[in-house]
Image 1 (cartoon, rainbow, N blue to C red):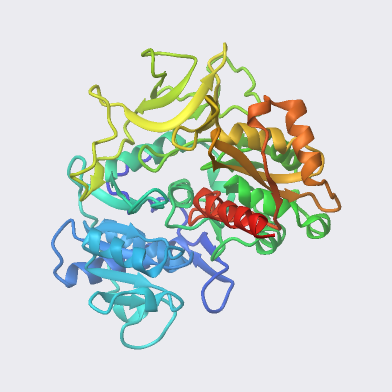
Image 2 (cartoon, rainbow, N blue to C red; image 1 turned 180 degrees about the vertical axis):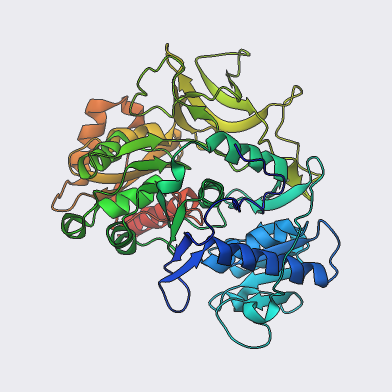
Length: 504
């Protein structure tokens, strides 16, 4: 097992550095191939250039860009030089981008041409994909560089939450926390894989896999951002073996039936889904489309990382809808309101990947218990074998006529309908019940269930209080910046649809 000290320095120089590290399908002249020698040299050149500017150790340097090799080089170089990398979602509105850059105290922003206008005038920037002064190539200071040796718990990066329930919060993560994540995920023979990454590099899902791929000396096939067509084409064209995605991405991919049928997908060996719940219907559809691939339903958080669950210590097969058995190096417990332990409750966890805290948020109560467990806010169920199942966000739960409703439970039930591809459930204010569930549904291709069909199915397969009072059909569900379901947008849409009904 290699020994890493700086999170930006995960490249194995004892391996063949002429191996392709990144096949970049973004940029201005895709595809571009970058060897490990090239990626390493770019990261060193970024580190040297930043050090030359005289920033104080620990200063924050932001990245605002679609996925591309230069993003990874900048990310690694920032941390090698002892600064803090701050990837920023380009899907945020401009006011939130400006808030994050101000909140983080960013001294410099690396950006691509498409997003450079979102950088405030008072913050210096370096632009990917252009020539001349102010360009990335002009900024680089080529040469060797000795990476900074981080102190204990020294911040390596801030990852900002989506801000769907308020202002985005900067999660402060140390070098040691994510070196531990990389180390626990490393395994023999990973270097032969081609990892397809289409999730945004400002998100934990894609960043963690990129670092694992580098430490394993594997190859990354990097899409600038997700589209179902490009994702399928990349699998076939570049013989990708390992896919990582959030469930909505997989659902969108599976709707491209003609392209799937025309593409050779036999290279895919592993699919890891996380960051959002997966339904039985989606899982079955993935297994039908890629029957030879192993499919993992995973779980992680920005605050504590992607290493939470794993295989059962007795070798028991993981139930399809389970996220697994607690990882041996992670302490977990389920806490219900009326007891300290339960078979269902809010997940609390403690492990070496635990965040330092939230940046610049002294007014927020720390999300830690007195004994150092992080309170996830996610509700889980544990079965008799110790396997865990994600139920839903505690703050997504709503009460209808005195009954607790978890939207993901209702969504999974609705997606068992033969005509439903995807479903999303949100609460709608009601004078009698307090709140009642309503649903947005994406029909399967060729299927035409009516709203009444969906309601009858719900009444036959779930408690009556959980059936959606309104059902609205949409072509696709809105996604937030992390490619997860945007429930805030759906609640707004529900209000609009209800107002339209009343005006008729």
